[in-house]
Image (cartoon, rainbow, N blue to C red; front, side, top):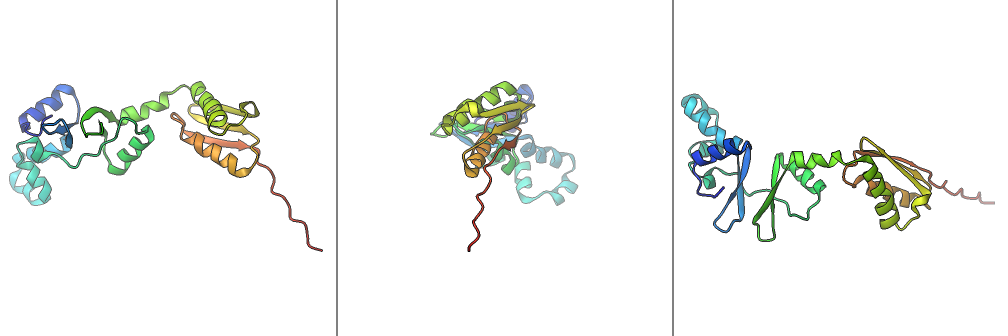
Length: 204
């Protein structure tokens, strides 16, 4: 939606596409803000109960109630992600900023897509066999250059169990930490057999 779009145009587009928010663009197609249903509600509230509502609206809400263009109504600056950002990064931003969706922008700030909470959560639909195979082949065998035959990785409902005997405790901890970042993993159960710490000999 262009920054000059009217309130009526915005309301119509929200209804037409069945969405609760959309990015606002300038003349160059750069994302400059977001307009959501929450941004538009103050106008409806003020129209319905002008005396009572005006007293409890915050100053910014009063401004939004009088806004007629997207540029005046939008929340800014827009919180965005890049196409190469990880799903985990997008999820952390959504959680930290309490937003339901993020515009995806290129290096120039132009819109290339939208990622929603549903998109982020969809990674947990990933097949268990695929998750286990990635951890075994790409994490243990690839990232850590270890023999996958010496480890057993199983996954059920996104819950991963890793068994095996790493050379030392720090290496085992790194494997577990890396496995937790694999897409689709809900949690990791550490069943590695860590080397026993060496006992110090008593001084004579």
